[in-house]
Length: 425
Image (cartoon, rainbow, N blue to C red):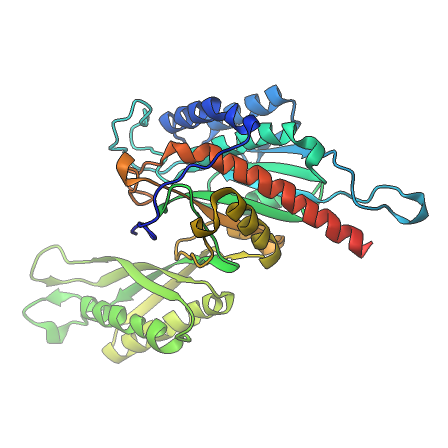
């Protein structure tokens, strides 16, 4: 991946005094988390830091949600618009979920910063350390702005976004209930956008991500006598080529879709032995739920046809992982408006999409919301490497503006939700 809009210079906007007061601790927390990465569902130390900070702020929380998850709750104090009939009793206040992921990746860091990973083979190479620190500081800022919140803010610190996925277990544990969540917002620090920019899209933002495994079984033998064998490598090569017709000939050209074979395993015990089998593993991705739903049948149909033509047998396995991230237009308009107010019109890009995947999708499948990218790339600071790269680095100057924006989005979204509830009432 490369940085989009590289001509746009890095920009750090002015933030409120309450956010500025958090900045030193914000950076310190992010660096501490970066130095001590933990993989999915292993975020014991990270979870303890979250709990300690919430307790210090006086925010009630639940711990051990879906293993290592933590959920805090801030109850806003702004007067709700209207009441219920003549009694003027307050309406049920809306609840907005703000989500941060906490897990790191199984990757050896190559940076030499003082706060580089101290855990061999583990690294925060996707910005989740920043996300956790940002949400903790946002919680502190929202407490200072509590009289402006027309509802509740549920703070969700989620495990295992990378693998195997913590959002669905959090939902199953009841994170969208008690109180009922009306909408959700999340951000992702993004080194494919310049520091101090925002990328988002109404509707699909990120793709689904599913995995397939294809085993092709033939008949092995001597490479000098291929006519006595059924070569699974040849069949695998034809399958790989034929799979490309799914996107090029079976999917509407106006849709975005990816079918990638990323791993091929085949080979006899010597250069002159045709093996018994070949195994292919890959991923299929789409923005459209309909395209995603059609993949398993389409892929297996291609595999079955090729194998039948060449006399081979096959086995097919499909593992469904993350659905597409689909943003709600109304909540996205709130995020876009607040982003423009903070950063300026020319620093908000409303046409950004990624074929990468995110399990924020599970929340947005249940409630309306918006997931967006906050640019964190700065070539001058050697902070423009792709995500999941051993040299991944963010421009830390964007952390405070990200807090400011998230706090503004929370206040504005709750105001919109409360007003909509008053109109319905």
